[in-house]
Image 1: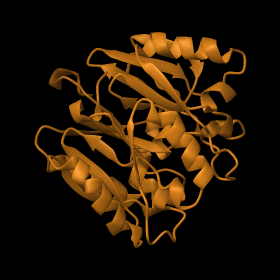
Image 2 (image 1 turned 180 degrees about the vertical axis):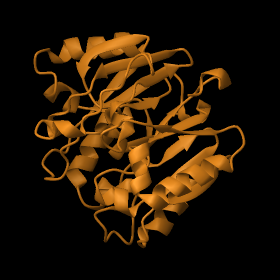
Image 3 (image 1 turned 135 degrees about the vertical axis):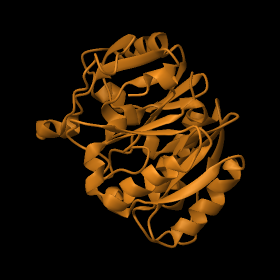
Image 4 (image 1 turned 30 degrees about the vertical axis):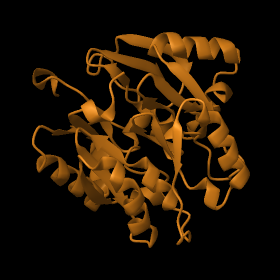
Length: 276
């Protein structure tokens, strides 16, 4: 399964231009990195392109799905339906899900149990069978911390980040939600070495966002929130990317809107002739 380190093109929504510094710094970081490409998606209804764009699993295979999240049921004007002729999918998954609930980890996909909540017409086992068959991967399901009022999304990319070599980075739930952290470790332990973030300066409710950084090739775009945890998070994560250039991207405004850098980007591998 194609990994972030193998991608060479990053897309953002044209609507991200409204968040000037974030857009400008992403564009600049890509422009200054040889071999990478920056492209803009037009005609989107919001900035969260990770959630509605297809999921690439190999250089010539992408998976489409139903983008109809329950948290947009009363906000249908925010739903973006991509045009298949422009971004063709070689496989279709007859399930409702968001791209933000897909974390690719070599031969494994990590998701939260939100997938079951949004596909109640199918049994748990049937859903897992469909996912395994379509992705050609093992599926690891994480508990969904839906008891936190603002956690309506159920996205795994706000919980974990795959660092390669069987290591998965877990957000800092151990700082404030001990039982949930225990449950997450239990779900992940059979498959991964789990490394947890933790902050001495655990003062901001926005510090979850560091887990939602994005890698394209050997470039890492890392959230900068202008809070004390910026330095702590960078120091903990940087050793995993010794071969990469890490660029801090002003992200405070988009984080206040509910997402971070993985959420507002779509990174894929494309042959030069296919880059739109």
